[in-house]
Image (cartoon, rainbow, N blue to C red; front, side, top):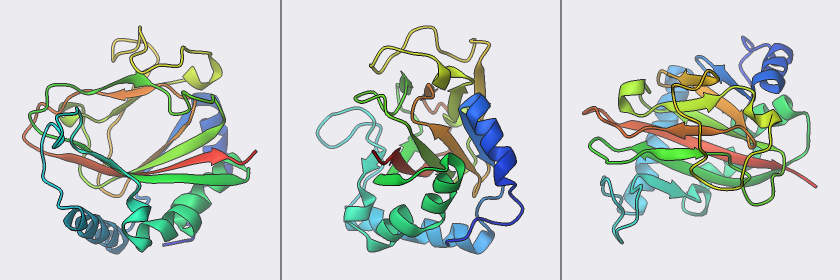
Length: 213
């Protein structure tokens, strides 16, 4: 799973990314590639004895979030550093990248809270991008991502829980994805997700990158 599928016009996607701060790539993974990602995700969750819960074992919020998958399963390390996610972000940003982490995100059915509006490079405000690959149908009812279009061109406070960003904001775009679709956003793009009020999980794998300095 290395080369970017030929149906994607990277020049056009790059223009959209620079304008909006995010892009959606429909059908990013073929059926067999999605099956491979799901199988390795299941293997990772088995390795860490993952139990689905709206809270983590130590009582912290967001029990469906796990980072550093690449430190547990070599397959994710290959994808993070040399696989299609790396090649896609490298092409989109046209910059040398530093691979940061591979992560598992699940909006767990019945959870009380979503993830508040924020941008990924809160600490250093550095350029970079995150690619998010959907394992399930992601809809507004089960906690899909929302992006604030154009927010990567603005300066926002370095904190989680930015005010004035919700689905009523004129810039808000719901990234409703099907399994195998991908969304890529700038590390400076404000994004968030609401709690999963449905009975269906919303799982995804993300790869985080910063631009090498």
